[in-house]
Image (cartoon, rainbow over all chains, first blue to last red; front, top):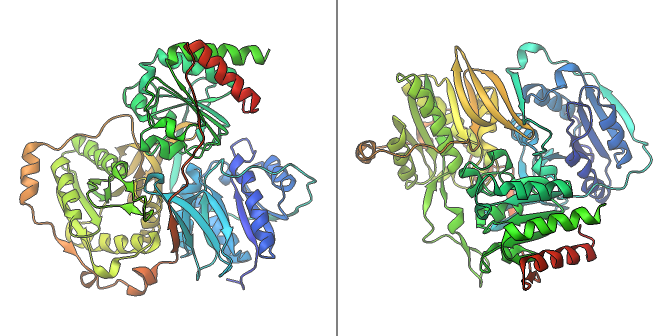
Length: 334
Length: 267
């Protein structure tokens, strides 16, 4: 490996249509700050196929340089192709650290890459800084179901790697796109890709279940009472342009698929607004949603623990509250 | 089929409390459980064995002596044999060091039990929540991986994995040997049977120590073999100042909530 640079990298994951996943663009915000503190350059790494839109977004949101790896083999994420590409880039350019969005793919790529280049990775961070004493990245992450926070350093290995939760950092205002573009030609022979996507089973209908990137989430729990109760939850979500979430109790009762589950055995979310309907707020659920900017709780039980974390709480019957709330929102948007 | 399931004994994080004076975790009296995601991995192996009873399922755990309780629970559910990996020199290992120790231990167990066609792990453990050890085991062994798996089906020399994605699911075909990490499926894992439980209690579980791993490089284990170091830990701040709304009627409460949120420009 070449002598280490002061470059800070952000992996900008792409969607199949060539746009950037939000978290990659979000991470340019703390990336810029950290690179500046260290006197280094902010480099976005964009991998995919026909990804001009993603490259443009990274440029507008503050990247100084952009490394672009393009080709049909990178259209659909595979662990093997992406780790090969990333390893080649790291060996060539020797960055000091890299931020990766903690999406399903990011959390698949991160540890595999860390192990291949034998370095440390801190998973699922919710805060980033530069440690003043040592100049290392200070990676802060929750553990024990959110009961404890830990700050982790990787003092003697480079690059320092971390995955960071979507929604924790905000995108910067887009500015002039003036990043230097560096195209890298990386060929991966077919036999090195040892997995094959046989079938893609996206959820039927246009219902969005990308909870990690949702700005507003309306979630239902045991208090919703059954699949019929979710009709009310969905109606409110619809007028708000929100994504539908659920507690484990609702999922285990078979009222809604697991892909909607928020909490320790489901998704971890960080929306601007989280509306919990009929969710008591057990610690497992709170571990998945306490990162929301604003939490609204609607529950019959005034002692439900969800009220401990709520910014706004209605003690009342969700079957009466939700239709009125939905109507009010609808009225205001006409 | 010869399947290895890696499991971890974890504190039931729902029972964890914070000491208000010292601001540290109170671990005493917190029950230990088999990490739920590892239970899903074991269930996936058991479902393969349901279809092909010649399948052997071996469970392996790294941890202190009491982790044998968790291994016995797995024997009671579906596993045929169990191994514990335990040594003081392994203490303080981060994910890279842990996955290295486990991968060396897997080679050791393979010398006794034959080569594993598939290694199943939980997606992550609920105490550390890193989701790193599974993919790192795969890399140490040079095997392909699929993460966020829901179900597995054997198809000749390959596995067909139903994998959870942000948009739904995918079916991935992966050549064996391979490493698969499981998330929560739509079904509940089976319970132990009384008969299996009683048999499990009589089993002496062998322990693999550093001395039993002749090729292991001790520079790569424990605290000194771990690239990441914990600088400090702290308890997250609690939210205060929430507004509770309870008007005469639910309708009034809903309107009040909407008003407050509109005024605060939240909606």
